[in-house]
Length: 377
Image: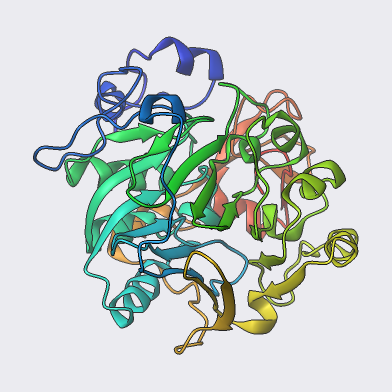
């Protein structure tokens, strides 16, 4: 993609990578409420509960809600079978994981994803997204209004454009149209953050008397800004169980019976943090971990939640990059460093660096540099 083209005001303020005007057209010409999808007859989804009426009907329809927390290592991917037969995917694992996720969807007899959500633009959440979008029919695509300098992000946006989809902006108060259950975004609340994790789209799914909360990598700042009711039976623990998420106040508000942590075995980040595990235990939540339990599936009939593991319980590992992600390998991915620094950065405007120079990610890794915690999860 060419760079340096005119940007919308919100992107100028961000200071991130300049992307073509075509990218912004995916947001429905920057309309306040973008089109739900490119499908024939699709309409703009209502922005809030008020737009759908005060009483969103969530009475059990007789169908089942099944939530699959896929074992994708140190990454995130959740597949939802909704009560009316529709489907949703939240995030798509790390680089190269797309084909394995598509295989898992095929095993579940999924031929279409009605809704796809990219919570935020870190590679361990959107690494397989280009393959997913290219490899299966997609009804509507949602993500927060933020971009990233990575080839992974560009590959995802390119796949969205190639599919003829529009980008629906995920933000606090926005509803995804649903019959018999509710899908509401609780975050992000504000338009600009210093940390990519706090852009995370936080989604609450309510079915009958049961509810599920999906938090991406939202950290304490985002948690504190959420004003909607987040009390939920099941919490997808934020940021792989890091101590930067699941603050005491937020956990008290959610008050989960079950908590699921998507985390890689023996990961170098030390996730999940001992403090997070203790807090969850003290809150009385039954904890499931993908590094220990594999793919976790929780089912709801609208009254009761039944936990379990997937019939096909193998992990969904990162593999060699597929053609859709070939441009995002370490040899072609670029990062920013300083002459004496010990970290590499995704954003040349990161406040932790000055006078940065651009090099391939592969070179940064060869030098033994570590990722900046502000730029990377």
